[in-house]
Length: 244
Image (tube, rainbow, N blue to C red; front, side, top):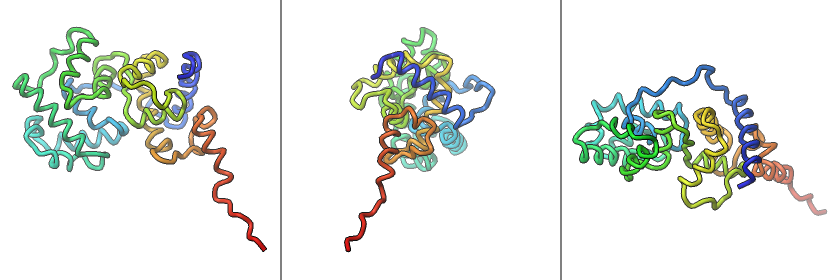
């Protein structure tokens, strides 16, 4: 990674530029009214996509099933059909069902309220116990959105943006939890939720998988990938002069 001060400056400038490109509501988002279990289910919708897309999928899920037990006893295909058009609906459905099954087998209910009473570290450890249904993104999401802690959920699109921006080196590090910790050191807690939303919008609209739309990116002046991509563009599409 670049030096800490450079990362801080880069991400501060990026945050400001993204707020201009993707205006968010002026009002601070209301504290989540979802329970811990519901937030974990929502995180399975939110992982790898935007809040708007996750909201639509989560709302459809709640309307399609009577309660969480009905989701638990449904097939992966039945749940996946409701989650479309989210990408990889089958893997999301599998995570949800696995989580609900694990919680039910342990508690014979779907109440996880007691696990948040002993501090954030202990809560994170307990959430990771449900490893088939909970990944690092979901743990960080619950800490940030429900518990008011400092955590930056890192999904594949967010990592793609940070790597292209040069904040994260391509092979760094193997542990997603360790990588998240290093990012959290340079993004203030107060900016965490907004940063999460802005980067997800950038990843969906501009910094897409494959060939990014660098010419439309507000970060192109500071982004190594953007600079390389734009530098190559003038030579693309040129045809060799015809020989006489």
